[in-house]
Length: 204
Image (cartoon, rainbow, N blue to C red; front, side, top):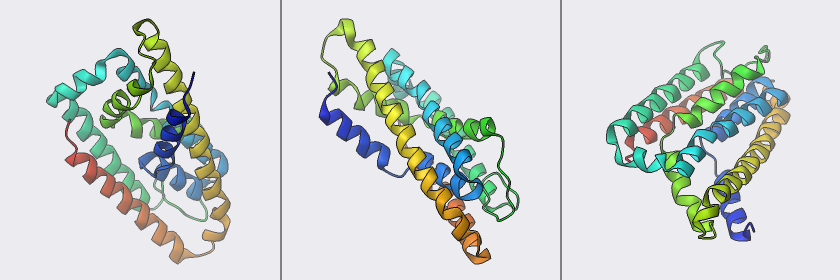
């Protein structure tokens, strides 16, 4: 049975603005509703490797291997800095502009997935988050982890879609001002750069 405590904890975690939320908002503002849904889908599927790692015990290996942790971490740092540049660059993947047309959905989803895949802290996070809510029966632990992980992913997708749809609804109003668009692009670039800096300081 899924506990109310797990549902509340998971919802609080999902609602907290992080890299995936910022990416989904940027896509919603820059390209509209359906692209933001693709972004939410990609960010959600980017969770899968970390849930598998937590379920199979690979997160513990990542936690104890400084080299492996740092390889994944700095790949994530480089990727976030690239996203920051794409926010500033004219015609960049995340640039907000009035004449911007929607990209291919799979391309948007792939970028979203990579944001989470290249964050090594997620595996360790799930290793800490899920076990306290298990029944304690070793025979069903793997199934329970999968169920809890599936619920977490469903909540992630639903909340991210809401964020994206909200951003898309504000798109028409925001695109009427060149000054606002410049501010948005610089803000997204600054946020991604700050997230890259924070990730760079993380330790296993």
